[in-house]
Image 1 (cartoon, helix red, strand yellow):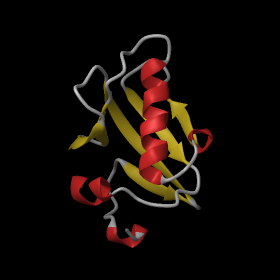
Image 2 (spheres, one colour):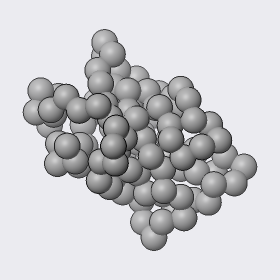
Image 3 (cartoon, helix red, strand yellow):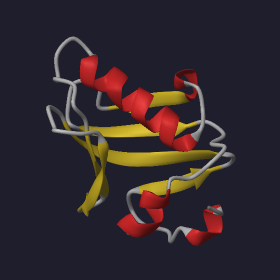
Image 4 (cartoon, helix red, strand yellow):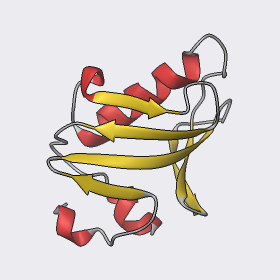
Length: 103
């Protein structure tokens, strides 16, 4: 999907070659997936529990797979201990179709 196909919403923005997402994490979900937009954030459901960084690692792995990058290029910029997070995807090689439908 071409980046131009995504509309500019409050929950994501381009920053040079990177994409910055405003995320609301739902831990202990039945499956991992993008959900609806809640206010200025996109919900991401994760199966991991929010203990000892497990949900953060699951979020990084999920987003890495969705954007076609290694986990090392998914950076948690804020929200280490909360459900509301800002995540930077460095140089994504693909854009998930869920982002086009979420807005």
